[in-house]
Image 1 (cartoon, one colour):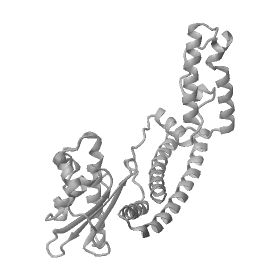
Image 2 (spheres, chains in turn yellow, cyan):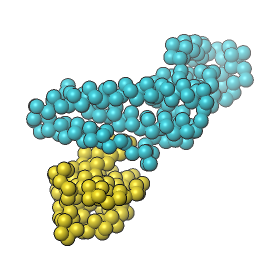
Image 3 (cartoon, chains in turn orange, brown):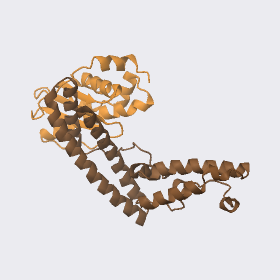
Length: 135
Length: 187
C-alpha cells in the first residue's frame, strides 16, 4: 500500500516520541490498543496548571506507519491547545490531514481514542468527572 | 458406486454437512478424524475410474471440499471463526469491546522490551521471558473460556454467545501474535 508523503514524513521523523511522568498530577496518560492489528498506543499530555493549556505531549506507538503517523500528528496538534479544544480533535481531521486510505481509518480512530483517554485520565486526576466513552 | 452418489447432485452446503454432522463448536476430534478417513476413502477419485464423467467430477469436488473442511474444523480457532463468519460476525470488529487496560499495559511493556532487545540490549531477554510466560498462561485461560462458550452454544445457539465468542477470539489472536513475537525474539 502506498503511504502519503505526510504519513511517511511522520513515520520517518516522528514528533514528540517519548514519555512523561505518569504520576505527575498535571500529566494525563492514554493507553489504547486494537487487538485486530496488534497496535498499542500510549499518548500523554501535560497541562499547565495556570493557563490550562497543554504544554507538552508525548507518544509511543507500536504499530503500522499510519498508527505512528496518526499519533505523531495528534501530539503536534495537542500542544498549545486547551483541554476543551483538544477534545474537539476528530479522527476525520487526522484522516484528511494524512490522506489515510479507508483501510487505515481505524488508526486515526485509535489516535482520537488515545487523546480522549489521556484527557480523561488528566480530568480524573484533577478530581473532575470522567468523560463519557466516545466509542 | 452409483448408489453412493445417488441423490447427491449438489455438494454439501457447509463444512459440517460435509461430515454429515450438525453445526457443532465442541467437536469430538477423534470422531471427526475417523469420519474424515472413511469419507476420504469413500470418495477417493481412484475409485471412480469407471464412473461417468459427472460422477468423477463430483468425487473430485467432494474430496477437495472434504480436505478444506477437515483443515478448518480440526482447529478450534479456525472452526470458531468459520461459524462466526457464517453468522455474519467477521473477525476484527472489536468496537465497543476494547482490551482491558492492564492487558494494554502488559502489551506495551512487552513491545518496549522487544524494541530494546532489537537495539542490542541483551538484558531485555529477562522481561521478555517473564512476559511470555504470562501471555502463555493467559492463552491457556482463554482456551478454557473458549471451550466453555463452545459447549454453551452447542446446548443453546444464542446470538449473544456468538458475540462473546467473537470478543474472545479477537483477544486470543492478539495474545497469539504477542506470543509469536516474543518467541521469535528469544529464539
